[in-house]
Amino acid sequence: MTRSAVTRALRSIPRATILSRPPQLPRTPSFRNRAPPSLANYNTRNLSVTARRLSDDDDERKWSTPLAKQLAEAITATGPVPLASFMRMCLTGDIGGYYTGAIEKSEQNRDQFGAKGDFVTSPEISQVFGELCGLWYVTEWLAQGRPSKGVELIEVGPGRGTLMDDMLRTIQNFPEMAKSIDAVYMVEASPQLRMAQKNLLCGKDAAMSESKVGYHSHCKYGDIPIVWTETIKSIPYDPEKTPFIMAHEFFDALPIHAFQLVQVPPTEPASPSSIATITTSGPKQSKQSRPSGSTGPILEWRELLVSPTPPFSTHTTLRTPASHNPHLTPPPDFQLTVSPSPTRHSLHLPDLSPRYRAIKSSSSPSSSSSSYPSQKPLAVLPDGTTQAGALIEICPDAFLFASDFATRIGGSPAHPKPSPRGAALILDYGPGDGSVPVNSLRGIRKHHLVSPFAEPGLTDLSADVDFTAIAEAATNASEGVEVHGPVEQAWWLEGMGGRERVEQLAKRSKRGNEEEEKDKFVKDLRRSWDRLVDRGPNGMGRIYKALAIVPENDGRRRPVGFGGDVVM
Image (cartoon, rainbow, N blue to C red; front, side, top):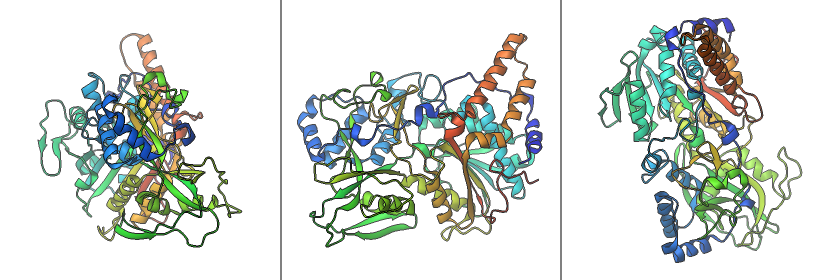
């Protein structure tokens, strides 16, 4: 992108848009990118024994939260649960989920965001972040022929609405695009956050109505209709629309499944299974069986499941690592354990991608050459299997959302589209080198890293994003899209002309009559920008990545911020 073109676009934003945001701790990778210890730091025990102990001592046990008690009762009845099920309940469960009421009920005058919450996101650190995101969609609108109608702005996981507010405010400075917007869709499961978004985007006195699709109001910017839905599937597919989709720090909160490679003794009998699994193309029946006549150990993926910790556990007995700040929470209510047998997820999910299959192949005792390092056995499990060491995390929900984004932009056999149009911008943190995330589940409580199994419902949970898996899912779902990135956030923000915007705001600043007050504002503005583009080992500019899904064009046009220029 030509720097001058971006600078000219940024200069069109009026002075009135200079916002004051107090410096706060960000939702930075310095807190959120540290991986928890390996499974060796959790107590690995026979799952049935754990469940039986829970049943015997349930009357005496005090659970840290109402959700913890509900989860424990469910595990007692059904057995240990997949990590994804645990995360889903903790984040969006009906009883005390993190985003569905737990914090509001237990701690008044506190929510998830800001200095009084658990983390601060990039849009709350600096207004420039949201402005550049809005400008990126303007450049895509220009490149795709300036459609005069049918534009949809869709944001998944919109937090308090700060990012969308900055984007809409920026887009208003491009009247033709602003007029082309038919509606804004906010995909939000939390009633509390939905109301916060409405108050910011529409005003506290704005009316909100309900329909089968969701909740409706009108934006303070140009009276644009805003629709809140609980799922993206509630937003109609329309081949004539141009969807511009925003996903900022959304994929990291999606539930993950975790698997460990184990060596199964050759004397263990084969156990064929026929299990129905849900894929992007619908249900599929699959049969799995162990090779017969094998004379050596067999490698199998085993799922890591969540089970309660023993009653009267302490941080010492659970060996809670110091990095989890054990002084900030009670002992974890739950722990990870290795499934003693294959699960329907372990039989199918690690077989979805060549990347996962390569890890298993490279770990084989007979494997002599591979791009992956060999894994040495770690420990013998209670059922006689041996941990082979390889661990992977897979997020099926990420596949589904990426496929949905791609289908809306490029069409699919089930949802044909005359010509691809629209774009999706994904900003999150995770490896950008194609590697599979491993051991990345983390808990955040009041800006500190804590055990992800402590105080369910009150602790934020997240995991690294597998950008390569998102790209694979998008291109597999639609032949009408191509993917660019991921690139480091610092590179993307700089390419979008962010530094020029910061200096522009600094020159326009007229905060107060005192020069000292103005100097403080300018210093805070530049400090916030430096935080967003910090390329240090744990800096946001390095750990966070940007990825774009755009209409397929044989790579002839790269998006702005990904090495491309503005197309006027």
